[in-house]
Structure formats: structure tokens, C-alpha cells
Picture 1 (cartoon, rainbow, N blue to C red):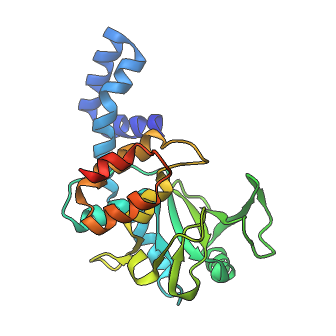
Picture 2 (picture 1 turned 45 degrees about the horizontal axis):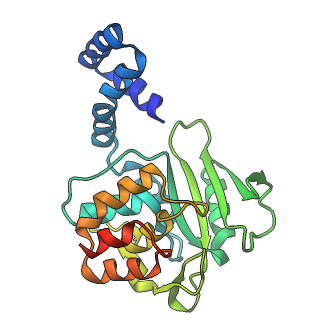
Length: 244
């Protein structure tokens, strides 16, 4: 994604091209990329805003299901509600959907021209049978588009509660887990989004997840901090930061 953002910015800004060439000539490509990347990221965010989410919402809003944006986009929506000037580029758009609604979502996407694929054991498979745990994911690509992949994550939202997929005993009331932005976009509560990001595939946070935590932590209220700290793995590095 880094190279795509840099190429995009260079194609749109003559001034950026001139500065990139200057650094490239003095110190090489890696140094030029490093020098331009923050500017390229900021320009991309300013240009696209939340338009990827608005396109998804136009498709899903008519469906009578409690879907919501997740991961980094959820944090962006939360921070926007806090009037925090914090956003970053995103490689895809993560969306939580209840397991029982997967086929109505699939059919809606197909009708809109999307190519859809279920994911099982890291491979694309035909989405003809409903996914059941532990399988929980499907991807959608707009035909002829260069936009973001839609990453649907099917979740247990039964009993009026959101259940953490990696440990279903960890829950939140659905009305607390599913926030609605001022613009009407539903998103996963930041403490829940960060719990997913606290460990990916059983490891420590990835660099982008660490950055997401650092930009969101100052805006978490006391209850959200306490809930997240309670459910982190033992000895997690975020625990001390949540106490401050």
C-alpha cells in the first residue's frame, strides 16, 4: 500500500515530484519514499475522507440487520466523533455482519455487481453454503473498480450482545458495542476494536495496530479503558498505558 500511496501522490502533485526527485538523486529511493510517505498519507486521507464507508452504507443501510464497520475504520469514526484530527489510510474496509444475515448480504453485493468469495482456511471458496464457526470471513470486490476490498467478518450478535470471536465469553451489550456516528454510520466501539488489534494471530500487535492504539488511547473514557485492560492477555504492553 505504501508504494500505491506514493505513486498516487506523485501523479497528482508536481511539487511532490520535484522534491521526490531531489531526495532520490541525493540519497536513493528508500530515502525518497520515507520522506514523501507522511505527506502522501495525509493527502490521501484528505482527498478520500470517509467516502469508502458511505458507498458501503448505501448498499447495506436498507438491510434490517445490525451491521457495523470495524477495525481501523471504526477507530477513525470514533475519533471523528471526538473531534480528534486523527485518520490514516486503509487497505480494506472491515464490516461486521451477523452470521444469520450472510446470504442477504451476499445477494445484495452480487446484485450490485460485486464479486464475492467466502474464505476458509486462508483460501477462497464458493459461497454457496453458509459459513459456520470457526470460518467467519468473506471478501467482496467491485467489478472494474480500484477501490478497497470489502472484508466481511461474521459475528455472533445473538441475545442482544456482541460476542468477541476469539473468546465468546467476552461480550458487550449490542447497544454499547454498536455505535452510530453523527453521519449515521454504524461502527464497533473502540475498546472492542482495539481488543481485536491487541493480538493478531496470537502475536503482539502489528505496527499499524500499535499506532491505532496510540492515537485512540487518549480519547477512551474510563469505562472503555477499564474494559479493554480487563480483557487483554496477561502482561500485555498496553495495560500500563491504559492506567495512565
